[in-house]
Amino acid sequence: MNKTVIILIALFLVLVPAQAVIFNNLILFNVALPLVFIYLIISLPVTLSTNWSITIGFVTGLAVDIFSDTPGMNALACTTLAFVRKPVYHLYMSFDDDLMGMRPSIATMGSAAYFKYMLTMVFIYCFMLFAIEAFQFFNFRLMLMRTIFSTIFSFIIIYAIDSLSFKRS
Amino acid sequence: MRELFDFFIRNSKWFVYAFFVVASCMLLFQGNPYQHHVLLTSANSVTSAVYEVSNNVTSYFNLREINEDLNRRNASLEKEVINLREQLQRYAEAEFNDTLATGRDIDHFDFIVAHVINNSISRPFNYLTLDKGSADGVKPELGVIDQNGVIGIVSGVGPHSARVISLLNPNLRLSCKIKNSDHFGSLIWDGNDPTMALLEELPRHTVFTPGDTVVTSGYSAVFPSGLPVGVILDDGRNHNENFFTLKVRLFADFTALGNVQIVMNNYSEEIAAVEQTDADSDKKRGY
Image (cartoon, rainbow over all chains, first blue to last red; front, top):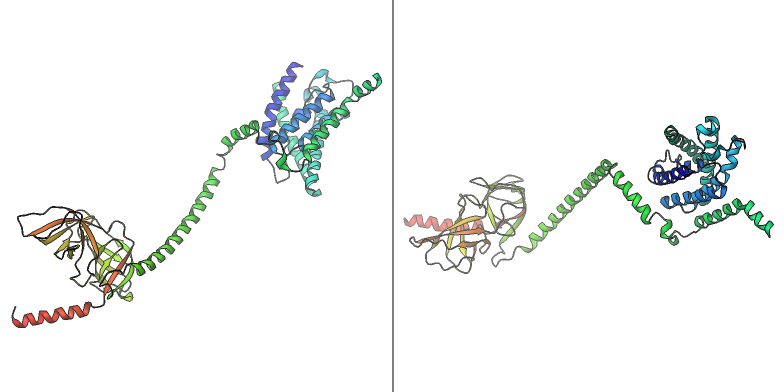
């Protein structure tokens, strides 16, 4: 558990500035925005209480918001993502194997379930974020395009990052 | 009461979630971006430090484009400078025309403004080229001056250009006098220094001090009298001879000539004719 906390702090310290400095500038074709920092929320241990994950989600989202000057947008989407994390996980995994405090990964879940879990999470987050964005500027076609292409793009990059950390462990 | 606590604990995640959603929405719908606390914007110290580090790295990435932009901007500004300079020159020429004619006996002199298009100072016999020629009324043996002093005398004229014997040419001897005295000598260049010339054949009894101004004498009908030429530099008089030779620092900066004026004496033909009559009568009397 202690090791997990350190890993999460390290992820926070790496992913949030990386999102601000690199990935926020990596917009493809004006629609695909890689939202990479949600890997932190995706990889929270399943046994972590929902209260804690919501708090971590809110703090992470707020940090990204501060960097990218979008007050509340990422915080709201992250809070929601952290809130639905457990139900989404149990869509693909039974309640029996709760991983004993492990973080979700290919090794602990199996690649098919893990991919489905990750893709669902990324899609939920992208949809949330661009739906919130639509409050300020509504363009349905643009919102749809952004959601779909950002989901794909984010998924690819998060998968790449995940495979890096998978090899390490 | 206990059941109430149990209820809260059991459903705590909903309350926590609601709390954070409300907090986020407060941030989201705060409206006026000027009222955001500085800690919640990218202007706070941590964020700006991170962005500064990243900017230190990324600012090199598009240097090529920035450089191109700067070059383009530079070119357009340079074009503008050239335009403005031309405009300025036109005004300067116009003003030059208006203001320089100030002498006492300047009335019968006309001035043509010309631009120096070629200039030499380093050869033993130096010439200038001007961009006005016979089509503009320039004739040989007209004086050329600029705002500082005498430049030279026109020697050859084409339709749209004129060659001028520079003062820095030993072929040109300019009749000069020291201001406020009527003793005259001739100014000649000794071939060494483009800022110096010698005033020769000055009578021995001339009274002067170093720093006195040397002006044109007006005896030649080429220049009006009193045009500044230079300033006496040192008291290099040789007392053994009947004539002094003085070093004169020229007013005109021959290394940077721009606009010049060609002096046209409207009476030059008349003066030449009068002088010719005298010479003829001298000849008749057998001198």
